[in-house]
Length: 340
Image (cartoon, one colour):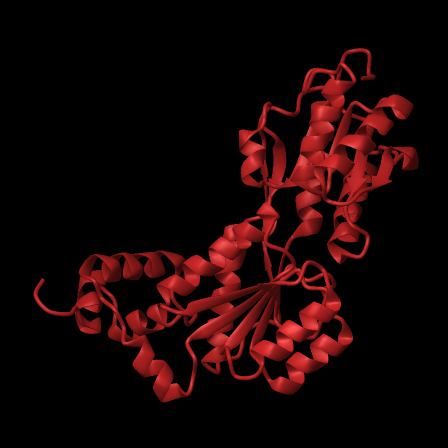
C-alpha cells in the first residue's frame, strides 16, 4: 500500500467503524477482546501509526506513563510489567519504570517526583501505599491504578485476582485426589491476599469435612528458601501427604525439601502452588498451581489507566480477574498407608 495508512483504511479492512479503531488505538473501553485483536492486527499489517506526539501536545500531555514496582527482581513483578509494556506499546505510550524495594519513604518520593507533571498517570505494583502516599496521589490528582494492592480498601482504582476461589480450587484438587493431611504455607502477613487465600483453603477443607490442623499451617515469606526450610520441618514433625503454598517459589522450595527428605513428588508427597510463574512449567516435575494471569493483569490495568487519563470514569473502582487451576505432575493420590 503506498503512503501512510489512514484510520479509515484500517476500519475498512477490519470491518469496524473509524470510531472503534480510534477507541482501540487509544486504549478506550467498549470494544471486545476479539475486536481489539483484529484492529491491532490490521493496524500493524497496514503500518498504521497515529500521530501520538501531536495528540499529546494538543492535550497538554507528556505521553509518558510512570510505573512504580515493588522490585524488579521477582518474576511476578516482571510478568506484570511485561503486560503493561505490551499494552502501552500498542497505544504508543512510553513507560518510565521505578522500583521501591518495599521502602515506603522511597515510594512516596517516587510519587512526588512523577507528580510534577513528568507523567500523565502512574501504575503501582503491590505498593506499600501508606496513608500519606494515598493522600498525595489524590491531592495531586494524578491518574493512578493499583495492581495487586496490599489492602483492598485503598480508595483508588485497583485491580486484583480472585484469591479466594483460586485457593479453594487448588485445595479442592488435593482433596479430590484423596488427601486429608494437607499442610499450608501462608504468605507475607501484611498482605490482605494472604488472609483471603488462607480463607479459601480453610473453607475447602471444612466443606469437605476435614479438620484444619494448625500444626500443619506455617507462615512464610514468598521465597524458595523459606518454602524449603518450612516444608522440611513440617515433613519431619507432622508427616503431611501434601502441601499448598501461597506462592510458586515457596512451592518449588517445598518440592526440593520433600526430595531432600527422601520422598518422591508426587508419589509420596503432592505440592500445589499459586501464581503460575514460568518456572512452574519448567520445574521437574511440573508444578500444579493456581494461575494468576499476571501478563493480562498488567494489560488490563494499563488499559484502565489510559481510560482515566482520557477523562473516562471506570465502571468499578475495584476490578477483579479470575484464576485457573493448572494441573501438572506435582500432584497425585496420597500413599496407600496415608502418610508420607
